[in-house]
Image (tube, each protein chain N blue to C red):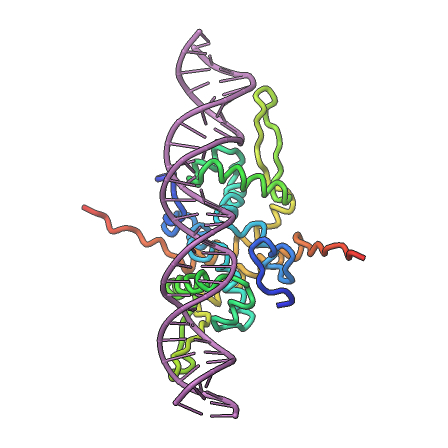
Amino acid sequence: MSRAANKWDDLSEDWCPVARALSVIGDRWTMLIVRDCFLGKSRFEQFQSSLGITRHLLASRLKRLVENGVLEKNPYTLKPPRYDYRLTAKGRDFAPALVGLKDWGKAHMPVRRAAPAN
Amino acid sequence: MSRAANKWDDLSEDWCPVARALSVIGDRWTMLIVRDCFLGKSRFEQFQSSLGITRHLLASRLKRLVENGVLEKNPYTLKPPRYDYRLTAKGRDFAPALVGLKDWGKAHMPVRRAAPAN
DNA sequence: ACGCTCCGTTCAGAAAAAGAACTTAACCTC
DNA sequence: GAGGTTAAGTTCTTTTTCTGAACGGAGCGT
């Protein structure tokens, strides 16, 4: 209202904490990456094959999550320099939000299974 | 994994309830529309001026929320046919997830106010 | 030496979003 | 009863983002 006509990028300064949260984790794949982290995944290939996201987009999402302090990138081998991505304290604090989402999905988004085609 | 290489659209049938939830409310503006509903907004123009979203996108998001049973569209005048959008029970059940997001935003996404330029 | 795995990057083309004007339909004021 | 206003969209063109698929490089196993 003060300055309406936000675009997405201005959300990080919005008065509303929900909007600020979404400015970091509110785009298409990001929450699912974070979910995968909670499920124990930590490497590029794991996220990629689990989500089917394009490698390009995955790289940029991971970068953003690291920049925003949700994940941290650690070397797990040095010889071929390889990194894994792990939740920071900030990232782990996201658990309640994810649980809220999970509960809602469970209650209201049943898996409509395709009719068995036999 | 069973059939990796989802795109976004296959998410509604994912085994994971978080993914199924996100298939409905997981894109850029949708959660903010729902938040606005919780804040008492209900009309097209109210959402539009609050979010600065384009009218085209708002119309299609509202349509999807109605189709998915999160909002319902009711006429509030008939003479010029005008509708408002209100949360259904399913939509109201989304509150805990939104609270989770709010708490996280509040704790971890401070408003970095631009330095006063004097 | 040769292929394999992991973690990306690059590039062309497709899809989605932004921005702004236009539509419809009734009301409000003169 | 002409002209303006409000509400809820639609239509259009341009810009941005995402996809798909291939390429790179750095070590590792054999």
